[in-house]
Image 1: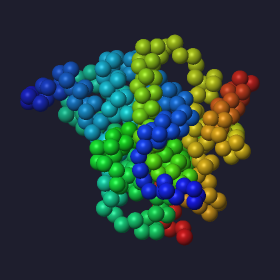
Image 2: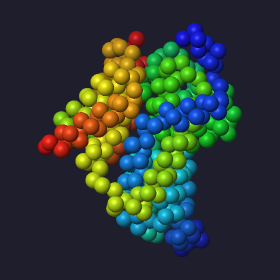
Image 3: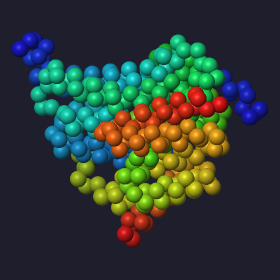
Image 4: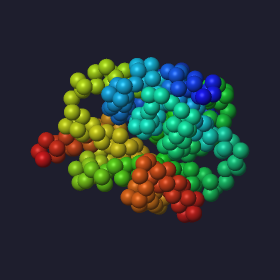
Length: 236
Length: 107
């Protein structure tokens, strides 16, 4: 740790960008799988290439893009727009929590770079950045480099799915339908700091299972996460 | 029909929709940073935030793993063990997906 002390203040470097891009590699399979699935489903649903790529480039949040497809309209009205925006907000509300943990790291960054970093915020990139931060790293370039490469992978895989989705072999055979849970499980390991600090995780898991059984949709993620944060605040 | 109603009923509607979805998602992405820059981070708040990464992981994966039964649980176990032993994230991923595909190939 003492060796790292000059780096303990948040800073930004191009070397960090490259390091972040390399660190993002384990998230590639999940991103590729999900974006191909989205591109394929969007093409089947009859979305244009521009609409499909626009959703992936600017919304850039897999779960909400998939849910958005389910309620996509050929002709829009104020009511259907309000519905899809509300659903998007509900599915993506969990990102508020991700941003909250990044604030101390980003607080002295230039506004425009923070806006870009947050525009590209995803759970996978955030987990990789959090691991790096927990290990003492403070280079914001790592977070941004990881985010930028994942965004590019997302776009390329969306394009692939849109045009060639039908050609992709059965993903279940390679276990790829569960690639995101497996990746998340892997990222849990470096977070482990003993059983006491994992008690809130247990609370989060139990609450998410209960909410998942009772409420349709993705509410279980934010319910579990909030329960974990609350438990963390209460347990000394 | 109003001018706005006619506009969003045209093909421009999907541009409006994508823009609105992108905006509301961006607001979710920045809200945490904006709020925390105005909140004093007490030790209690810090403990809560420290619990978040692990909590969000378990809240995301447990329902998915339970829905997919014991093969998913075995895959997750293999991934976690491989990662804990090697500390190489790619190996953890390969162990998990490999376990799952072997179970499915045999089953």
